[in-house]
Image 1 (cartoon, rainbow, N blue to C red):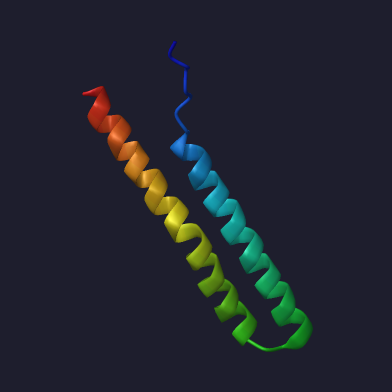
Image 2 (spheres, rainbow, N blue to C red):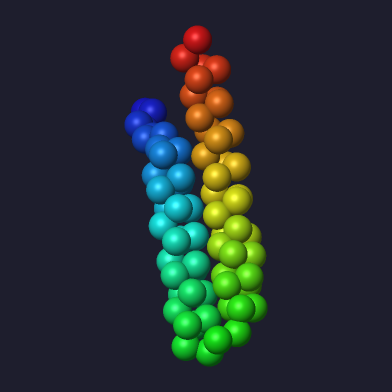
Length: 71
């Protein structure tokens, strides 16, 4: 008997990447405001990119696969 498997929604990964990136950057800006050290913003951007880029790449691959499968 075959089980129905729901395909993951790539848009959810894109929203998750955006939310995580925004959260990390907001934290970096808050640390910058409290400490006055600009390195917090640079670090937040780097960490946000490291978190969100793999999610974005994965979502784009899934969107391409869905597009290719549909026609």
